Image (cartoon, rainbow, N blue to C red; front, side, top):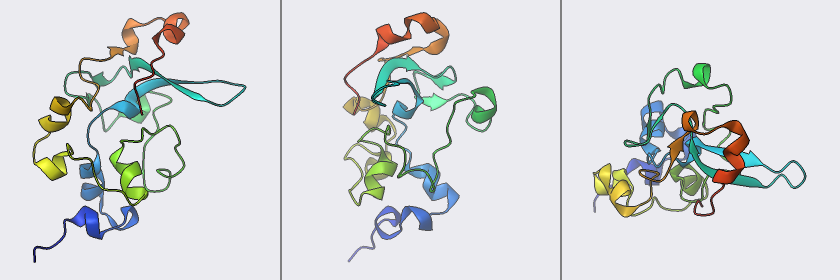
Length: 147
């Protein structure tokens, strides 16, 4: 019998830093600008991405320095993954934390980082950078296709 992959046998807390980083499916949905209704606390996703997101690769152009460049960039880690209600339901961290399997298109299952894009699970071709949208117009960019 073949041994189970590490993401089946380890909890998020047991994973080393390389394993933790490898879990990221690269969908970039966490890099979307989100709006919160002050009265209801409901979160609204927009089709506007962080200025650092490379919208073709769906990767951060300054991953190591992102929290210094973008004031409200939140580093997802083992201590906050269960507290971030705005994480999309397809987020690999959220899925594993809930005891669910990785999606069929995840690169750890397919061996191919393009599989997620081909499946349509990433933001590739669906967003614009916040550098192209005036703050007063952000509400015009609310979307319903996330989660």
